[in-house]
Image 1: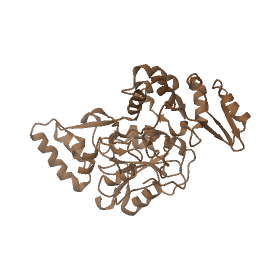
Image 2: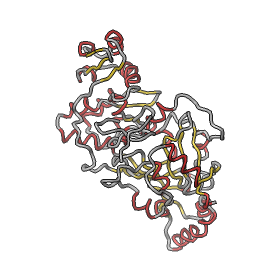
Image 3: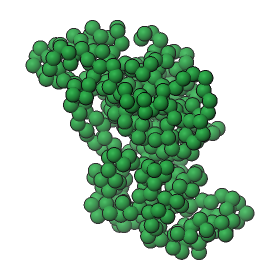
Image 4: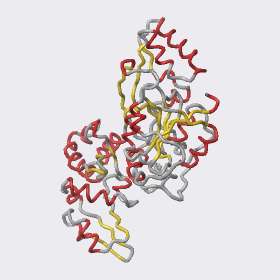
Length: 402
């Protein structure tokens, strides 16, 4: 399935495998690392578009439209743990060179001046420079210096700051709060955190794995870093009004059957029903799972179409996704309905992510290509935090759903 793209914006994780097609939600085996960074880098210059766009902020403000209220929801979270057999066998403790194409030795020395001893390790020729600084020097950098340097290195594909970077919303705590990582490295995670366009980032996998000392401990750390939460959303059935607010979130043709299901559950004494129980069979059975071997081609675009069985095959990039949407879908207002496709776009109007709207501001999604990405339920706020540079979002509905 991997096809080398003709072009792609700079963004998300490392490896020796060929990169995936544009938009780059991540490389084949490491897509999970950089979902957050795609729009940060690609959303720098706004391109003109003929049709009106919805701002991410305005949609987030209406994320409970058209009826479900926050008090109708009981939300918990569970960690979707990455299976050991999916984690690549790469030696995560091996340091990676920093590439500086086009740099002279003098210019490169100035750039890495805040890394003790790094200038002495520069290897330069007519094409530029590379450097493999000592891990101790990398670990000793001041946070502000790390952010300045890594923000430059992240713009160069092939650098760990471009390929191996995790991003994390400040609203869910620092990297040291990631569930499952060894307590011994939590302070180190904080000291290695840098900021890209204001978003906390972490790239120094080798430093942490070297400090852990064993391959097994390093793999455990990576599994924790690559595991992500999925929301468990229960819908309250305490009154006719609460049921009708849930029903309002569906298209007209589906409302009677949804109403019947909710009333039947209420009649048996059930105080709530799980949102996931309302998903189509394919989405319900894949929620909280990872792609099987041979399904590395699955991505966010295909997942959004497959939710309602509208996917005829792999969707390799944003251009293909746009073509499919314009052929079989219609744009809809911000009053989204269950099953609508939400598309996140960069400043040039290119799709960088898509997800399926559910209820109450929650969506069904898979971030990126490859097997490291699970199918999950996530809040709209998390989607937008994953793409902090997103310039617009729009909603699409299959033509035959009204």
